[in-house]
Image (cartoon, rainbow, N blue to C red):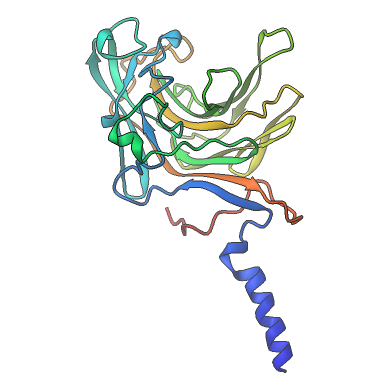
Length: 292
C-alpha cells in the first residue's frame, strides 16, 4: 500500500504541478503587469532606433512615457490629443497632433549612460512562441501593433504578430517582412476577420521555427509562412499604439480620445530539449490565475 501511495503521489506531482503546465516549453520572458508601475528592468519607453515617431509612415503621434501606465493588472497605452513641435520629437518631419506610447525590450545602446539604462536588460530571442493578450482600441486612425525586429539592426526582417487599423475593429493583420536573395524587400501576410477585438481580450501569438512562422489568434492557427527566408536573428519585442499615417489614415471626428490599448500579459517561450511533446500555443503559464 505504501508503494502504491508513492506511485500515486508521483502521478499527482507530474500532472497537477503547475510547473508542468507547459510541458515542452520553457518560459523565457513574461510580464503579467500586476504591479502599479512599469517594470523598468524589462521595458524601454518610446524608442524606435532612437526616434520617437516613424516619419516614414507619416505617423501623427509623438511617443512619450507619460502615455504609458499600469494599473488594475493591465498595461495601458493611451493615445491623446496633444501638440508636439517637430523639433521636439526625434524622427518627425512636421509638427504632430497626438501623443501615444511605445515599449520595447531592446535595452539601451552602449552609448546611453543614464541611470535608467544601468538596470535595463535587453531581451531578444530567436525561435519560440511569443504571445500577447490584449484588448484593442476602436476608431479611425488608431494603429496598435505587437511586433519583433532584430536587436542591433534595422528592419527587415520584421515579424508583425498583430497589427490593426481600428476603423475596422474586427480585422487584424499578420505580416513577415524580409529581403530576398537579390536584396529586394518582400513580404508575406494575411488578413484575419474575426470578432470585434475592441469588445474583448484576445491572444495574439506566433510560433517561430527554422524556416517556418505560424500565427495564432485565441489559440487558433490563422496563417503560416514556410520559406528559407525566415530569419534566425534574435529579435526583441515592441508594443505600441500609433496614430495616423499613410496606411491607417488620420483620425476624424468619429475617433474618440483618449483611446486605450489594454495589455493583460506578454509571454515568450522557448522549446525545451528534453524530448517532451509541445503544445502550440503553450498552455497558460502558472504565473497568474487569470480571472479578468
